[in-house]
Image (tube, rainbow, N blue to C red; front, side, top):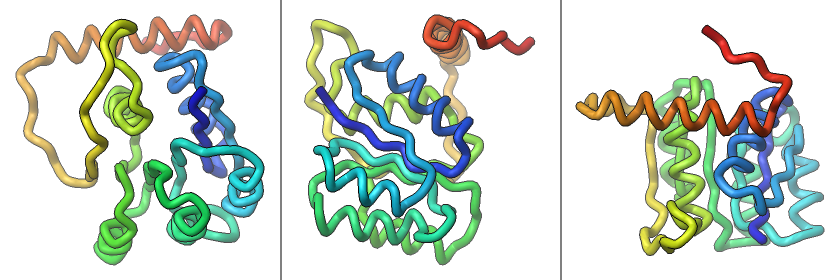
Length: 173
């Protein structure tokens, strides 16, 4: 079983990411914590395969959290998320050598694909992935793809899967 920790002071976003990851693989153990201090405590209690953290947190920042976690667990995969826009921040993130860096608003399909690669999960039940995680900087504008219909289909499947996990959710029009 793979262990994932999500660190975000926005409980709603943390739960959304948790539910999304469970759709990706129901056997994942996904823990959501609101602070870096709690994340450090929890990381000392159990193994950790993937850390997903916001940069701006109360108390210790996500940048400092990554540095502290790397000391204890140098091979853990790390995905950073932020709503901040700062050239100095971009430089700090590059120096951390994280596996992925996302800007809010978060594109859930891209987030899940990156998490799948970081965790080494198969894209189908019978297919094993051999692709290595890569640094994904979602802060830069990417060229538009001509696969609009495929994207709509993937997003529809994601929404349907999330509704199964969160039956009380009402789809937005």
